[in-house]
Picture 1: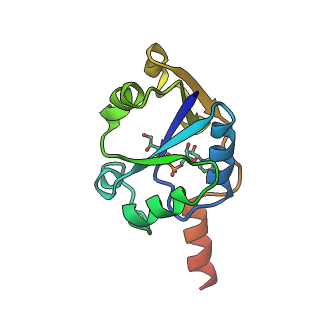
Picture 2: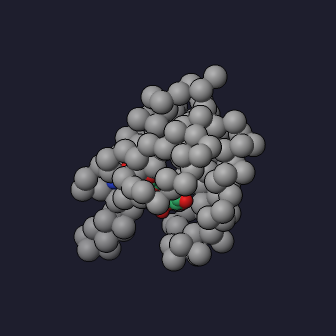
Length: 130
Ligand code: C2G
C-alpha cells in the first residue's frame, strides 16, 4: 500500500483544499492528513475559525482522506513519515522547496495551488458583504 501525507490548517474547507487532497490521493492508495493543532496555528500566526476537533471531523468526511493526525510542531514530519511508513509527501507549491530535506525519507511533490480561492479571501469577502 502506497501511503501519502500532507499537512495544513484546512480551515473553512474550500475547493482549493479539495483539489489538493484529490491530487495528493492520486499519488498512492492511502492519504494521511496532518491538521495543524490550534496551538501550532498560533505558532504559524494563524487563528482558525474552526477548532482542531471540528477541522478533523470535516477532513475525516472527505472521500480522499483515510486518516487525520495532529500537526503540533514544524519538526514532526520526519517522525511522521517513518512512523506511518509514508512513501510520498505532498504540499501546495506555495511551499515549494521548503520541505526538500524530506527527500531523504520519501518522494516530495509540490502541486500547483488553486488560483483565486483561500480561507483568507472567504473571510474578507464575507466581512465586506456583511
Ligand atoms: N492550497 C491550495 N490551493 C489553495 C489554498 C490552499 O492548493 N487555493 C493548499 C496549500 O498549498 C496547502 C493545503 O492546501 O498544501 C492546506 O493549506 P492551508 O490550510 O493554508 O495550510 P498551511 O497554512 O499552508 O499549512 O507544515 C505545513 C503547514 O502546516 C501548511
